[in-house]
Image (cartoon, rainbow, N blue to C red):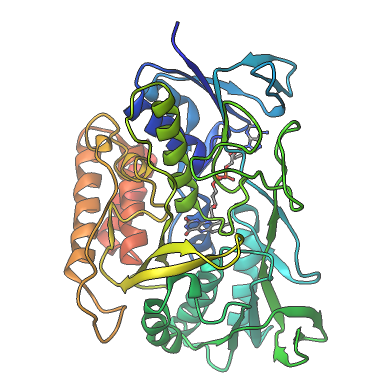
Length: 454
Ligand SMILES: Cc1cc2nc3c(=O)[nH]c(=O)nc-3n(C[C@H](O)[C@H](O)[C@H](O)COP(=O)(O)OP(=O)(O)OC[C@H]3O[C@@H](n4cnc5c(N)ncnc54)[C@H](O)[C@@H]3O)c2cc1C
């Protein structure tokens, strides 16, 4: 009988674990337990308030059919590691040979009286903030990274796209400030990031205050931890996150599950975890998929299918949407002096794609799968890094690779439309739009037509 792997959670880590296992251990039986039928690419929701992209969503049933796995639309509520079984909210008990926990984290409001941006449910709130700034109902906005939130890139995207939008609309005199405890803008990406970001921030009129947290919102101002204040008719904050893993798993003080370099859960046999649910110091979709790859290799190694399973060695990749051509950032991460610290090593920033396909969440298997929507053909390739081109004067300058990415996405869209797959065609157009920062009127018209033909 084949080995049964149960994967809890159908987000980036869970789906990458499925794809990696299918590639490394094709005969294992896989059951995905997920409480949602749709996998939404949450990172792209930052562009929705600005009408620059629609976050793609993927049908879990179709993914399951394609990958020949079983799905239980349910929640794992408890793990009985001694018995190799999980309990589901619906009352079912599911036996496993190996278990992968990829249930993500939960958001909590970190700054009272600020508007939280957590993803899809806050798109309209952000749209309203933009409306107030456009109409003059608000003259200043502060974007805040609460100390506890570890992934800051979406905050920069919101601030930069706000600045870009106001400039494009000819709205003057609005103060856009970003407040962050980071020592430098996007410091996790190393030395290359501030140099690449400076011209982009300047061009959009965004002021960044680094090295300080925000204490409270008071009388139209944001009060900082060191007593300074910043004009803020509106305050938008990222939420902090906490872990809420199923019962029966060990967790640290914040609810995150401790794992080793292969994703093995401390103190348990045959139980692995990957993604935001784990106790790693940086919670990010790309890193979640890299952890899932390490877990899949470890499982394949135990089954004798991989000779030397590779441990998790994080490389952070960030595709920053700025309201124009995006900026690509990449850094190898290394252990800091304390266990709870990761520091940037070699780093690169460019307006050319630094990995291919140029996905926002750069999973080795998942990025090609989601980008192409052609699992049986192009989806078999793996994400690959590309060398950083020589430094340019402006990271936002047009680049041949960037044009190539847009041209490829448009070509794929046309090909999909020709065979009548309008869903895939619209997805490819949306990919082109997020890379290019917009579509030509001709393609906007085609998109409308294809939407109606679905
Ligand atoms: C606004 C925003 C922008 C971001 N931008 C980026 C970006 O540009 N790049 C990047 O790499 N990362 C980005 N991130 C971070 C990224 O979204 C997360 O790091 C990533 O989603 C973590 O993946 P995961 O699979 O661990 O968890 P999740 O994506 O949260 O998936 C967990 C899944 O498990 C399900 N689940 C939960 N509990 C259970 C249970 N008990 N049983 C079964 N299923 C369960 C959930 O419903 C969910 O589907 C962003 C995050 C936000 C909020």
